[in-house]
Each structure stands twice: as structure tokens, then as C-alpha cells.
Length: 293
Image (cartoon, rainbow, N blue to C red; front, side, top):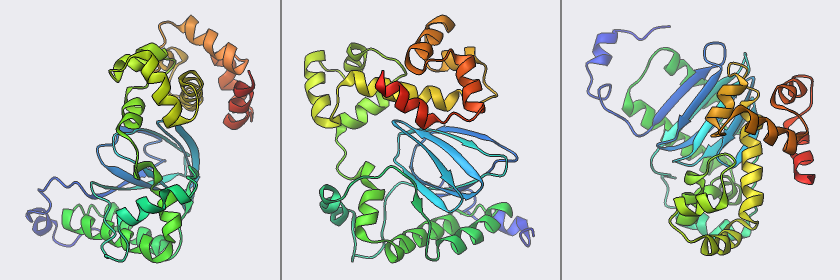
């Protein structure tokens, strides 16, 4: 169904307004790979099929009926199955509308809940709300005012159908995250040297080591290796990219250095690694194997 009298809608100033709150629909049958730097906070919903998602130091898979929070200034890569569908809410301010719950209250709960990076199940009235949203988006209802109302409705539903503990865990990446933590995430590149990472955040290497252990709970070398392995395993499954393109994108100096890294960490050269994943070896199994090395 199309909008009635489109010229009337398009002449409204809400259609000409750049909105910092809204919704985006991505269909896997038309666009299988989605990449982007997040200017705003996101809540990603898998409404059909499945989505392999990589964001900074997190690698997961969303299935229909699940959602995932992504904080602003993150690098997001999402690979949709052919029947996959991604519905994304973006917003600048986390607004729970009602004074009964505030971001400050959730921050106070942060230390008492365990952050779980796994997707959260969608429940309550949210599925029916998303179904209505899909109709709007498919009909090109791009009114900024409407989009803002639907984001506010989403927050109302989060407050209505999830406990404060669940919300504190879900939004944990932005509850009390330090400036240093964000700087490290933003400065990270695959297989970087610790000294280079320290230099990018304008710290002496010795100071960087100390603060990193306190903030992340592991050595910089361990963390860099884990994040590098996650990025490789994610991109190696994007079959539109050649091995050489992946090596370049991940900042390896040459194809041979990328091949050596994969052989050392996964026990497979890049092409063989891709075939292993196609044959049924999972990313989780490869990450566990690399961790034991």
C-alpha cells in the first residue's frame, strides 16, 4: 500500500528535517551486507532470518525475535542471511520518558548486574510495534516526527516489559564507560602493536599497560589478539570479498603476512579457513582453538 497524496507528505517540513532519531529497514534479499560507523546509538532488531553481527570487540549472531544495543561511535558490520531482515532504531539520547526510571538509576545498578553481550529476546508489545513500523518504512513514511514518536514508543515498551536489571545489562556499554575505554576501542586496528595503540591514545606504553589491565582485565596483547581474530572470522565469511581485499581492509601489510597470521592463530591459511567455515566449523570453535594456542 502506498501513502495517500504523497505531495502533501513531502511538502511537510518534517520530511525535510535531518533527524537524529529514527528507523532504518534493511532487507537481506536486496542488501546482504551492511557496514557503517554509528553516529548515534542503535538498537538492532532481527525481524526475519539471521544476522551475523560484529561491533568493535563483540561478535554474535542475531536470530528472528532478538535485539542488540550498539553504542555510538562503534564500527558495525552486519551480514544478513538471504531471508534476513534488519530493523534499526537510531537515537542520540537514551530517553525513558517517565521519571520513574532514569539513566542515572540504571548506572547505579551497573555494578550489581553482569553484562551479557548476547542478544536480548524481544517481548511484550514490541513485535507488533515493529510490524507496524515495517509497513511505514516500506511505504516510505519518512516523517521525522513519526520516527521520533516510534522511538519514544520503543523506550516505553522497554520500561514496561523489561526489569531495570535487564535494562542495565542491555545498556551496560554506555553506563559508566570510561573515556579511556572508548579511546582504545576507536583507536584499535587489526593486529596492531601495543606501542602503536598506546601512541594513538597519547599515552606512554608503560602507563597504557597499567591502565589497560585495570580497565579491561587482561593484557593488551591478549585483547588485541582476540579482537583481531573476531574481525578476521567475520570478514572471511563475506564471500563478496577476496582474501586480498580482506587482508588490506584489516591493515595487514601483505597477503603473506595475513596468511601467516591465520595459520598461526587458526591452524588454517585464509582460503582453507574460509572453506572450513563453509563446511560447518563454527567461529566459536575456531576462537576457542586460537585461545588455547
